[in-house]
Length: 163
View 1: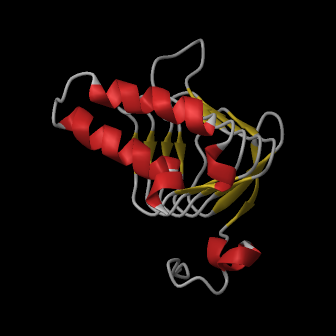
View 2 (view 1 turned 120 degrees about the vertical axis):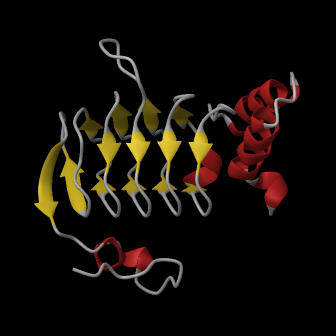
View 3 (view 1 turned 90 degrees about the vertical axis):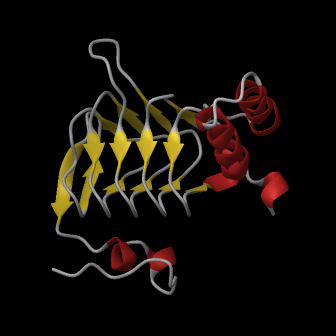
């Protein structure tokens, strides 16, 4: 239901922001923080089909972040900048970001990659990889996220990776 989906609220705010409507996008962003307990700023680009677990509880997204289509983001995830460099992360399509993970700095998470719960990612992640640990390191490459993640196996929105 759209009323209880913070991503729908953010998309509406983003559309108004791109249309240069004053004040309303900022008010929607504040409402998202109050109602859902998440920081989903209106300038952030969030792709279609992206899902936030548990109503985006505790999620913080940088205003310059770019999130692809069909990305799954669990609770208490931070996608933001770091104190040393300017810029924000770019998350590729079909990625999965586990609970409590932090993706920090101007880096990219490749298409179909999996960020493990609690990982702290500080460097680029190649497509179809699994990254885990603090700091995050690639622990497996060449995965098919549709097969790797149990809940995606029978989901028609995700297509199997073609080598």
